[in-house]
Length: 229
Image (cartoon, rainbow, N blue to C red; front, side, top):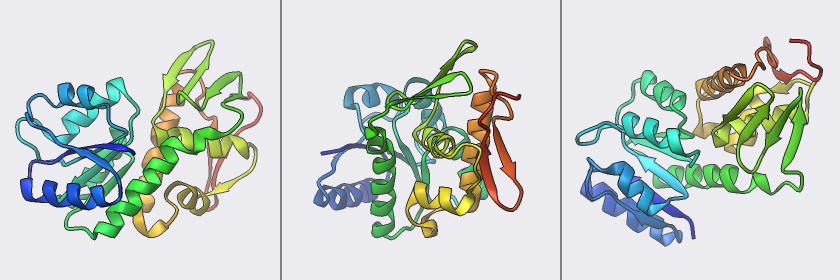
């Protein structure tokens, strides 16, 4: 049974979502003190966090940023705010998906299932360590390390990197990446993929792997095979 921490201050919505998710055998926990979210997160040890943007004391962006400093746990934002910058901000902070209120419960379930599959199933690959451009890719720990340092990636970032290095020197189309990530493109915006790839590139630059993922205009992305940076 997956444990979900639902950070939502609308009591009626929280109760409804908890009841519906419980019917799918998810163990749903809420927040008692919205000024102590990190303490309750640490005590709960969830497999997935669903968080609203507008919350008492501090907004969801604040708590997402703090969670990402300590963990790569999957995060889904749930919000009535519909400005594109909210989605971009959530992805830049390391969120895995964004659901806009009001929503069809079937859509929320589909996104939860897709995020959990990405987070906890793909790492069952028999080869949990990969080598690329002198770096070690640790699929189990979502970590990339080389002689210049080590970075920890989000589940989405690692999944994208894994798909690209499995096909290194070959173009992977945006459509294929979106299908592999979210199973159904109807549940994701094209901009979300762009944000995730850009964030992955920025993290790789921190350990000297700038330009290691190339954009092929009108086609997709490609991980280079030889160290020619």
